[in-house]
Amino acid sequence: MLAIVAAVLLFIAFLINAADISTNDVFTSTNVMLLGLTALSLHLAGVGTAWASRGRRR
Image (cartoon, rainbow, N blue to C red):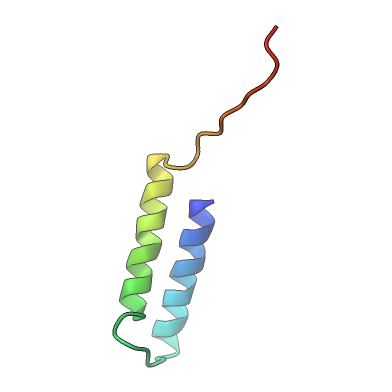
């Protein structure tokens, strides 16, 4: 899930940079790229990937 979020954020950063869209100081392509890289690194670290399976015990 975090990898998909990272891919979307990096794509948005690419579009902002490629189209040379002027944004405010908070929503720059570098900041969006850093958010995407943070989500990607959390995904690679294994955060949010452990699913608690509560199946039937035998």
